[in-house]
Image (cartoon, rainbow, N blue to C red):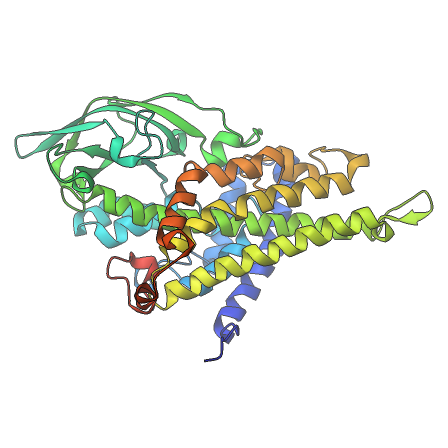
Length: 429
């Protein structure tokens, strides 16, 4: 059977439209922010233009106001939007909001969709996801935050969370807590919707991470917060997906987040490579163009090769998602691989433009210095590859799914069967 690498014409068309959008609107808007323009005004103008062109919530079904793209088309779109720090924000597809929108869409009640999902889809509010804890680390089943039922009306939550991305700018939080410590290990946890601000959900601090800090760090990205949860009262109507289903929902949510990280990292690394190529073909030193120097050639060739690998990996996962195939192994690998490629691309771009350094006034400097979402520069790229948790956990998971490299033939049929637990973003439309 032949392997078909042809991208459908409709997916090509939307990719071209989004690419033009990023180049014509998002990149100039970035420059205006650097020059001192107001962030909220700039983003509001971008979003109004995007919606007028039908560029809004790519992965959300059309009946909910989105573009209704399947996994493959959405992957192509995300790999364009990631070339600008305003790209995903302009089309209301930024993390961590995007994955939580999908969770609400699939598991929310009619009441929850009307009250919480609708303003998220309209871009009126932002949402964060509070799962990770110091005590648990990479083992989400080790979380200690408890939710005690109080009659039939409320739950009371107590505990702590950290690395809750975007909590400092969120209007809504989705919090996972243990509801039944005697249940089977993966059925002990439930998820709750919390309106913010709330005195029971207190942000202790925004934790410094490998992401490079900039003047808009905690507005655009929202930081990664340590949260104290003390006697947090949550109405029973805000229980999301039923008791005991929090862990399963969380894993499906994180699956999309891992892919989005990879797509945006690849996109930003591609932008860095494009800027580098433009620079080295136009600048001469000591009587010779930079592009004619062998050292520069191999640096950029390495970047191009790594980007090619990462892009193929992500598109293969999108293809499997489109077909409803099991992609757990590939998804774990994708969590580990694309982030460092972004760091490599940004690092080589700075090396090629070393005379200008990393001044924010230059594009190379902005990639590394100006914004917190810069996944393409130095420690920011490494930080982006760790956003979803320790890489070693994903490596172990990938190897376990591969049977230690000796996968039994009988297991291969699993790839041809639809994954009945797949969340909505995996469902072919």
